[in-house]
Length: 586
Image (cartoon, rainbow, N blue to C red):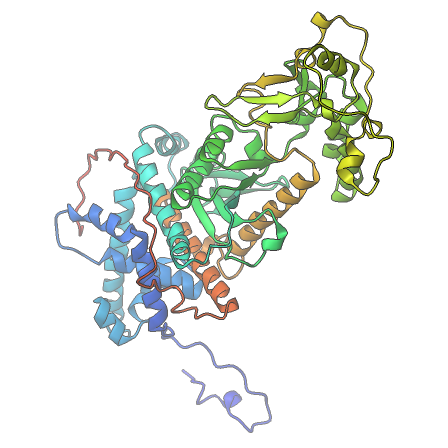
């Protein structure tokens, strides 16, 4: 075979430009400092100890160390953007220095001896297979496609009650991997400028399998079609992600935008529970609570699955609404007030102002929405103002907008009570003082209520304030009123963060979307490999932030004696009994 030294095309002085040398058959050696850094992060996640505890009770010889399998996958994802087993085996066996292989007790062999390489790789692959069988809620053969009925049983076992212990254990393992760099960033103080705002979204993780047919199930039995916003669909799993974000654009670049949690699941299955899980873990790692943005798919979820649990954790949802949620059919009355888009309005609010919400929802782009938002500011004078915050029962008190309106009913009600302490209306107005200008009665809208007895008037008009229960508009109530300038700024900024995070995860540097770089089949394999990809993405994000801050990307993640690594929240899960008997080495 011709080598570059023998080929005249690669020789200088022959009148041709020098061409690049072909790639060598031997893998390039990975720097020891990078391997040590990745190994430290992997062990700080606690995943190695949890999986080795599963292997502890198995009979037979130890076999290939599972810690080296996981380290090889992390190194391959970091160095080659691949989570395939052959790349992991090659880089951990032949892509590390001899000194590091001796220090970590990495089994090795002669690269020229193909039989020895195959034998060592079989040991490597058997360790990975045993781990998958230990963590799998429904072990089954994946060499051929199951009948459709058998595939449905496998998917039902993963998503049903019987598979919950294994599913919770797998979710914890994946989230431990993802949050390991996050906990290091908190310990190093790199997130000190982050104010607790997050953005949640579900993105597609395609798999190396053909979709289901009428007669045959896919090799990924618990996978399904993931439908995207534009109407396209892709077969695989869905990953619920939470990313560190900020509602104030001025805070850009002051902290690393890390993925704060991840759960891999069947598309459109328990989306609210997965979002609550990653938020609950984050809530135990930090006391910061801010705004949480999500798209319209989360707005349509049941309140007990998403809205109420997120508010119970202290987060303030920033949500967008669908056309049906702002239509006239969704409008109703509570305590006499008009309940619409999560707010309460005076029953005398002009219809033209209420119809602006539908026009904004039907607008095609932001250029059409901006003038409509300017017109919508007139409706603020008719909105009931919050008088008291939530109590222990989740109820709130809202006051009549008498201070913003000229209403004869409200003036009559106030005249029957205690005398007002307001003085005479000033004749001269300082137009430069906004508060004085807006407080003058001449600048406030005037409503003309019908001639109606006091007992027949709405309740919110008969008394100064009303009580609003927690079950009223649970999906649409939010801290920032929908389509106000503050809501538009926060929602668009937070949504831009999660979409940008999805784009970076699917770029050439992470390749979460590339199914050919994540070929091992099975729910366990896809979950762990996706979590490793996201963990490596977080490590690279921290390295870029440290480089931009003029710090070392290698030693910048080392914990000093004064740094405290936050422990991962302990989650006690019942272990399901297993009928099959496994050994260390088959």
